[in-house]
Image (cartoon, one colour):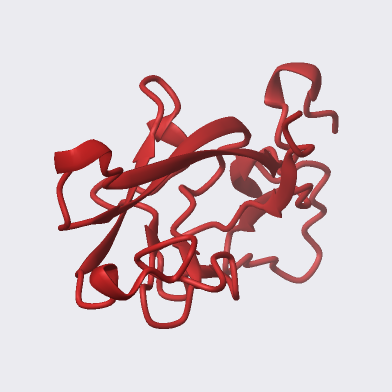
Length: 159
C-alpha cells in the first residue's frame, strides 16, 4: 500500500532556496540486520524522476538525498504543478555474491500544488496633462498584463 502523495508548494524563479525535506531517510545502514561483515560498505543514494515528469523540476537539477543527514532536496521549476514519481535507491558496494542484496528502492509520489498569485501589469511612468486640457482616454496606460492564476486558460482580462 503506497502512502498518499506528499503535497509540496511550487516555487518560482531560480533555485536559490531549494525545497528541503529534513529527515526523509532515517536509520541509514548497510544492512537491515546490522551484520558486522557489512559495516565497512559504502552507501550511495540515487534519485530518479520517472520519464515525462521531469518538467516539475528546474532544468539541470536532480532531486537528491544527503547520505549524512537523510534530507531530500528538490528544486522545483517555476510555474509548474502536477504529480511526479521518484525512485529513491540506496545502494551498497558489497555486491550480490552468495545471495547478497546490494540495493533497495522505494517509490515516492509527489504532488506539486499550484500557487495562486495575483495578476500583474505595468503602468506608463509619466503622463503630461496641460492646464485646461481634458483627457478622456490614455492609450497604452497599462502594459505587459500577466495572468496570475495558474490556470490561465480559465482566466480572462476585463477592463
